[in-house]
Figure (cartoon, rainbow, N blue to C red):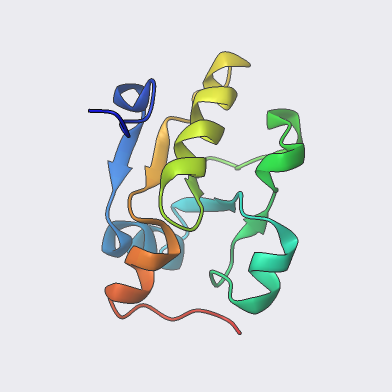
Length: 112
């Protein structure tokens, strides 16, 4: 398939419901890799913003035992961030499938 993400098979897809439940339960550290202008319009509650344009996996806060999950607008940049983190030696192989578009389609809240 032409639009398939390279190395997407190295990243585990989580549903919006799984991520929301994990964040609320304190089991997931959500990393939003969208740009600041995107997050200023609408953002995930309780996410840490680390834009992909300047992404450095070393900047990810200590997850303190939580699972790191990447998120973006549609699920493409979050795969890229996860692969970059893995290439840097971090065990961060989960992302929010569908991004904030899927999050909102699932009826989950955003900050505006």
